Structures are given as structure tokens and as C-alpha cells.
Length: 285
Image 1 (cartoon, helix red, strand yellow):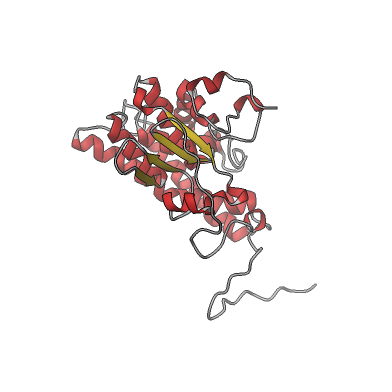
Image 2 (cartoon, rainbow, N blue to C red):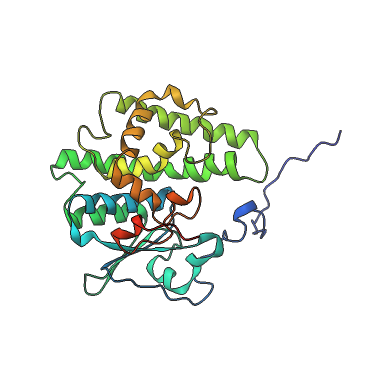
């Protein structure tokens, strides 16, 4: 039996292109544009460039919830960014988000147009702009912002950590899976204890903190991402499951989950959204 020599980090790390498995063609240790490509612009003031990953879904859920409230100025165009094809490295996208990650928003109702990148920043920007889903009272606002930033801080552990090593890594590494599984279960326990005494994360009112956390933890426990329900013993987090199921039943959430989605059943896909009527049109064959 041949033993594998333990890995010893080199004095200076050097990038080995192709070592990231399915993400090898889009992950790199430098930033900036790789090619010239202008972004499309639709008819509405709000222009969203995204994909229906958890971070992208946060924003489309909020936009659909705003429209459901009657905020007509929240109408938007959602343009598909094909991250596996490197659209996020086009010059137009990099000008909106120098970090080359979805989602990115341009509000053309301002002069000059306002760019907003990072999903949490977009949620706060839209909630403030339309005066909805963000409490005004200082203590309530602080609670909302705390749970919002809690989710943003936890995403690297859930997505880049647990999700990557459990679902996507070229090989299963026990130490990595154990390390991130322990942290994800701790985070689920934090949520479950809070939701044991609250309907939503901050109390009786649904807000952007719920939207952000649902997009990651809600879809995790309901089996939409990573297919790890049994592995994580999801049924034991009864309050998280109750909360996630209630949010997922909201019509605006169901619409938001479809936007910029290009996988799964055709009825759940809406690659681009430029008008509310797009939800009623048959999927392209």
C-alpha cells in the first residue's frame, strides 16, 4: 500500500489553472475584465444582472415583494449572466461590479446612474429606496441589519465551504466536510433557537433579513441546494423548516425564485424577466 506524502505548503503559492473541478474555467486569483462586452439595457430604471443562485434570488424575491406591495417604480429588467461562460468578466459587468460576482444592479432613475453590488447592499438600497421591508425604529432596524449581516458572514461557510466540499469538490476530503458540516449545523441551530420564539427572524414582521437567509438556509433545508437534508439531519431543525416553508409559499417568493433560472423543470425557469407578464408566457423550447 502506497502512502500519500502529506501536503507541505510552498513558500510562495502559485496558481494551478484547472484545479477547481467544475469551476476551473471561472475561478482565478486576479480580478478585472477578460473581454469587451457591453451590458444590455432594458426599458425600466432598475437593471439587474444576475443568475438564480442563492445570492441572486435574494434580490429578485425582494423586487417581486415590492411589486406585490404596489410599488410600481420597482419594475425591473433582469438580464441573465451566464457565470459558467464567464459573462461576469465582460468589461460592462466589471464596470458595475469590480468583484465580478452576481448580482449587480444599476438604478438609472438617478443622475448619474447608481451602481450597487453585493447582494446585501442591494437589499438595503432597494428597501430604503422604496421604504419597505426594513424597520424604521432603531432597535428593530438594528435587529434586521444584524440578521442580514449574520447571513452575509455565514455564506462563505455554507456555500464556499460546506457546499463546495460536500457537493462540488473533485474529491471528498473528510476533514473539510467535517469542518464545514459542524459549522453549518451550528448556524442552523442558531436559526432554530431564534425561530422557536419568533415567526420571522426579527419577530412578527417579514423583512429583508428573512429574504436573505431564506435564499441560503431556507433552500438548504427544503432540499433545493446540495441535496443534504438527510446528511444534515434537517428534520431536527423544526422551526427552521417551518419558517422556510412559510416563506417559500409566498407568491412573490415563488416568482422571484424563477427569475434568471435556467435549470430544473421548465415551468420554474425564467431566464430573463422584462415585464410582469413574462411569468405567464410559456417557457422557450
